[in-house]
Image (cartoon, rainbow, N blue to C red; front, side, top):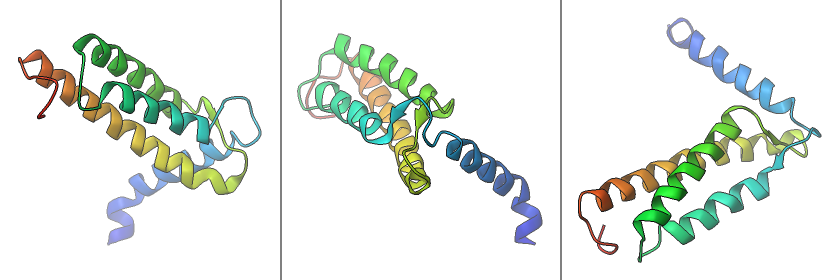
Length: 115
């Protein structure tokens, strides 16, 4: 059955929710600030004109930021922000994947436009 097949994955996701909810009111970066951070990084390093050194730095910063949310080094202002937590976690991973693909493209001789 569905329940038996996916019980482990469901339990793991529930644990993530519980752990994230423990950050309500704690120290850490707020969800809105967390999102602005990767949005600004993408605007600088992922725009039409790209500089390899800037993209490399952006990948490193993106990896650090993604580790922070995975380690719950963020905070929720209230329980309703759990949705923002999951959105930001997925968006942060996505921005990191895009930056890594841009870096790989540039390393292989691609130009700053047209990727």
